[in-house]
View 1 (cartoon, rainbow, N blue to C red):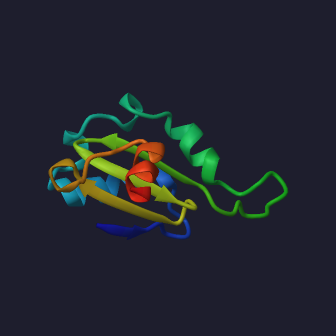
View 2 (cartoon, rainbow, N blue to C red):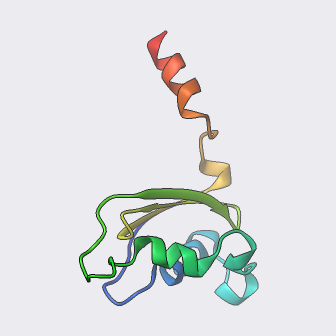
Length: 100
């Protein structure tokens, strides 16, 4: 699932909503996001700089509620159920495989 984070929506709120939709579970029935990541730190990572300028770039991936969550630039989420995900590999291993 692709999800665009709303203008007035925090990244963490968007993650809970998107994972809820993909997993078919109500947010209150899912484990707290704090069990896998610090929500305040996550929001701060993608918030505007202290001078008000937006941060540019950045990608973070983690597993939450049997889903691989990828945050791109604090604007877009990609949510994949683990059953649908290809295996996670180390970038160096992937690069070696592509060179062969």
